[in-house]
Image 1 (tube, rainbow, N blue to C red):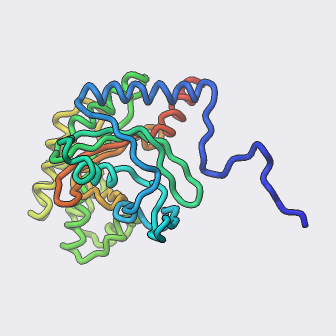
Image 2 (cartoon, helix red, strand yellow):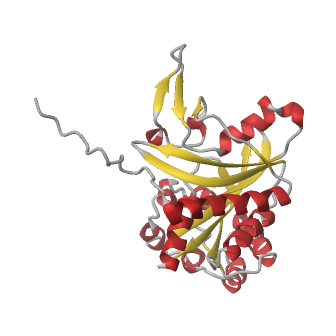
Image 3 (cartoon, rainbow, N blue to C red):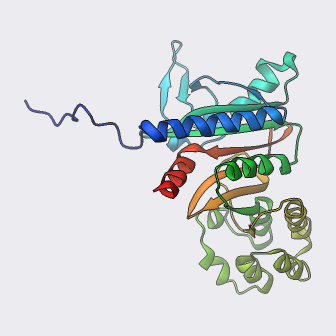
Length: 285
């Protein structure tokens, strides 16, 4: 019986193959990021490819799941943040390490392979350092992305105020919000800069005032092109406060934010190596 077997040179859809200039570029990015992170007091960690706890941080539908020798369910690593924090607070807590970085891939169902560079800091709410590290990396490679600042608490508070399901923000259903025809909400939808925030603060509900001000405070310390997206909602389960993304030509080069795991306030970010390689390759061509 004949079967439709892949050709010898084929690789599964979603996996990565780098060679020549792009392979060299990948190493340059990783080396420079490692240098910047170490200068900022981060130590490197390499976590296991398999994990028991991925469902805490990632949609279970994205997980590649297996069983271990005792028939406990494990997953191929789809996110590094949760495991890194858990390792800092439980496995290597005697080392008193509070700032770690990692350079390793993550994997999503059915066969997606994603290279990234990330860092996490325990007992920290300050995003300035992470943003500046990312900016230094982009500047080294001659890239000028736009910084997008959001606050995950704003969509959550709006849901409470207006009795809306969070899925409205998860799915980006802006039409649902505009159909409510609420002045302050309409202005939030179109808000992009600091002046817009100052105007909205005059009419926004008190529950949103502090969350809008924290976005302003973060922007004041950063010297780059900034846009505000107060209604953006990250689908990563742990981010729950200030959140940022670096965007360039419709690609997300980096993202990060504040979160809480096991009652520890943390902050972290990731640089998406594949997107950065693609951007630099296009720039060279």
